[in-house]
Length: 197
Image (cartoon, rainbow, N blue to C red):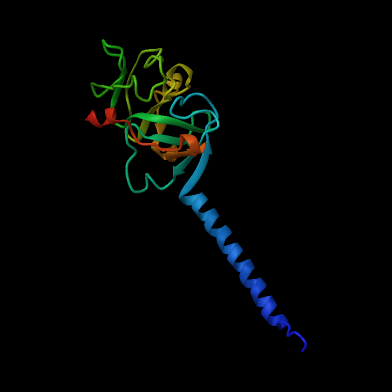
């Protein structure tokens, strides 16, 4: 008995379904990348030891459409030179951020930040230069965790915006370190920021 062959129309239908399925998957991936999540790699030492060179983080691009930027968040933004940059939010609009108090601590609205033994690079000073800035509304003061090796708001304090960047330049909040797998962790604001009013 001769083997029956699928009619050509059935083959074409299966191929078309496969192509449509693949195109749909690509479209969903592109939309997620454009509007929701994006992966970024760490190009420099400025966020050590929280983030190391070549670490990969996922950034939630919708985080601030439904909520405010919070002190202590790690954010990716269009930096002072126009490049994608990653730093920690230290102060936001209306805050006064100073360095340093009598115990060599950065203060926000008079509240000292307990940074040593936390997220700041071991042995690094809170800042190698003094500053006293009242952050304009809608803007952010950002610093790297490796304070001795970070070009951040301090380096651009004479740029006409006192080194702050616009909240509108924020691409999103880094919420998970996913690569390398051995260092994978959620990225959440350190507790010291909760004391600021």
